[in-house]
Image (cartoon, rainbow, N blue to C red; front, side, top):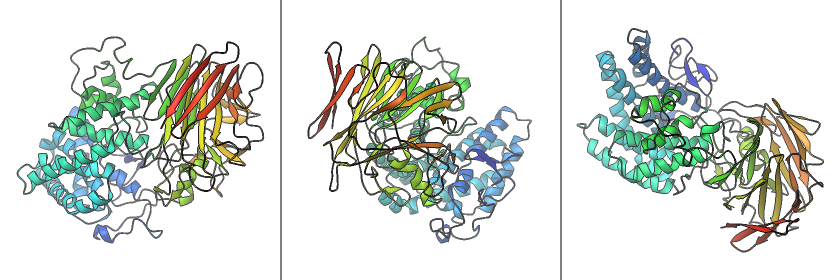
Length: 595
């Protein structure tokens, strides 16, 4: 790091290391260093750049990693390098001056990092550097207090939790400071109030985003580590951790649902795209016994969790932390299906914050290789055509009647509409697994309708059976199937590494890749970057369509029928029920997805 720079969205940058802390990594230019933060334009088209890149460097998680190196290797160059970086920060970032004082959340996150640095090597840092850090930490507390009216009125999401956590932490760091007791009381009230709004009993959050779920999960971890947390915090920590565990984080990559910006509270030298370490730590702090080897595999466990006194017995995590290798699990409106070489995620519901227009989307791997993949985020503050081009329904494998969007974007973060999805319990048969869900995203306007989807996973194929209520309302349907950048389409066959899988039921589809206007055919692995990827676009007119990947035995699939089974949906005002009939035996299985 001392030579290459700090990490910002997958690359090393000079900001803070060989360039001032106000340097924008994208342009190499500097944000105003000696202006009050409120006079700096970070919003309009005239702004210098996307400020998130500068803020990411200034969160100082990499400085925590440097402090760890200084702790384990006292004779190395790490302490001097760390002291120099902290000294330059204190000199270049006086209170309320510059872009790095703009956001209360950034101040709170930096306080978390500095608290760890001081705990690791504070007694070895130069005294004048520590004094300067303490002065800026106290100034951060004052800033958080002054900005509370805005936080409470306008930031009822992860920002409110983060700001509250900052106040609680700073009250612990400076217990004799004037106002410290008030910081603690106010922070605790804010944290508890937002947590009640933020969490659902099944572990999902109001922010419909994998990245932001991890972000808030780590806030809960810090609150537990500080001690004296209300009883609801460890309960929510466990639920939030289990939600991600049930989605398969310990078994490899999972879809990049919603906005992804690598947001973190904890420091790690591991892959910032991996969320498993945070989930493992959440489980450990919730009382789960984890394999001892995990403490070497995950930075988060090694540095934040107490050393386990007992090895977890074989299979101890099977029921809580590992997804099944055959069958299905559901959590927070998402189903994960494993069967044979297939792994399929079926996301039916949505949330009000940081989500994308992706109700009933499916993402698929075959033999561990991504085929259909969430296209990612791209940017928040960059070109609006990129922002909306990756978060709308046109970028996701969902059906769009007459080309309509499920939510309709408004500015960079908002939507004009809301929608809810409803997922039924998995139906596991000896030779296939079936999940069913529906949503009300199009139940508005002149031609309201509801959309349902059954996903069938067998050893040889993954199939999707489409439904609409009432039938015949939409004269045409559109759908985009975004492929992973490492997957190619060759003569109707998807190829990714050693996986070769045929497509069926998509006659007349077109392909777009890396198109700028209109923006389509892209994939964003991490924030601020995007690369060409193949999108398959489909237009159809039938209400009931069957399509999928692999090879279906027997006759060609037809509307409502597939591989010896017939699929029918019965709709009521509040419920949709799927009837699955075995045409050979006459047996009927029912899956009900209530509102």
